[in-house]
Image 1 (cartoon, rainbow, N blue to C red):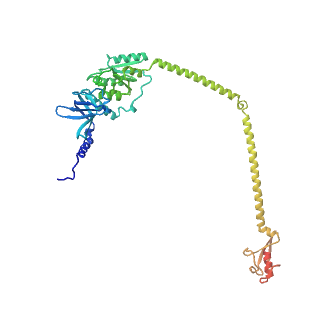
Image 2 (tube, rainbow, N blue to C red):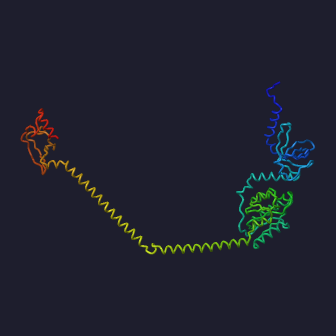
Image 3 (cartoon, rainbow, N blue to C red):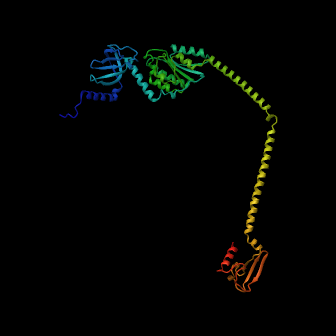
Length: 425
């Protein structure tokens, strides 16, 4: 025998519990049966058994869930319960943890209601973003209801009281029974196509869930959603809710309330118009007073009385700016002229012509124009051009004598070197 997988009772029970709770089909299940062994504990929790002629299952409904019950459960009552299947570990028994419970019959309708509601909501038919506002001043109001019911009389009475000139277009239909949904659908379509209405009221008076079931029909819900005209749902009393209420653009708690929502009060409109007219007149008078006061301030101001003063001031300011600009330009020219004269003086001091003006001359060989810098560069008979301050002297070399210049001793004589240094300095 392999003992590697021996489990304790607790481990086995936890494993079975995990399997049950992980099964999607057991997380949200509807169970029909007869109540027995019912006990309402002092803690508020309810413990009972659901059974049929072949099996039974233990159930528990905690206080947080059974507080929403609209009836008192009793032994022998046929019910439909909705909940999750799990295991109570202490006893090792599986049981149903009930969240919702309804008497049999009403419960079946409730299941259908919840299923349709969930499907349409998932499609986005209840999305507030797709709902349209009601017209503020409708001219024609369509009414889909029974021609003999109290709902129609209430709507007409309230509408005539609020706005006697309103036009009401009645599309008579059955509001109960198997024939009611097709007639309601057709009436909504006809009012959209040929009624020329601005808003539609769909509704009836109060009744049981079965009486109101025509307005839980999927076809009716889709017709309301497809309407090009805003729809107001007015089904039953204030505590009654139908699929039509969720799909419609606006839900009214009663047919009379629907008429109140849709039809404006002529007296209120007249009061509003009168109030707006009064506010408009007051605003015009206030604006006239403000403009008059502004005109007085303008006409009494100096600018208005002497409009050219500002022009003269600006003209004088412009003349002053022109004078200042001219003076700045003249000063700039003088500074640059002085700088130019200084530079010219320095250039003149460095000019060879100035050297010639002091009695010096420059000898150029006529053959090649080279400057003669040494007696070795010429020979007897060479033609020279001697440049002086006021012209050029045409010369020819008669002979060359090499001797030191006056005041310059020959090389090797200390005094002569000193004299040369002094002459160079």
